[in-house]
Image (cartoon, rainbow, N blue to C red; front, side, top):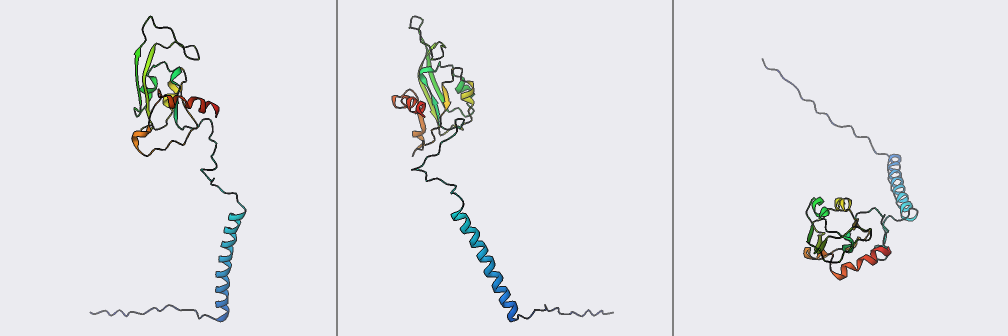
Length: 177
């Protein structure tokens, strides 16, 4: 028993291209190209630009933005709460207890300072800018500033010693903003 299956070849039926269909296809292609160009031209000339010319024009950040950290070391009581709260351990603090006969010093809000701050360094290469250190500070001396231009060429240059005179001078600049 042999079964014979015949294969039928199916050839696609092509429509013949007439002169009218050719002009219709050309017109459709031109129309969609012109429509796309009009949309592009409308966005180029009618919509204001999204970007700013950065070095010349600087954007003003909102007050609650989390940019560079600044510690007002004159008001720091060396409680170490910021270093304990930091999830990435990027805050390095060293302090020694003040002597009993040393003159009493207080912060701007009246909190007594019982430790002499010897080191306060923040490694901004490690910092994740979560803001946990700013929320636990009892004297509110560590805060996020709106200063966002602090790029460095090497990782070593991203450690900021807040007892250094040049960084203490940031206090006046950041208060004036």
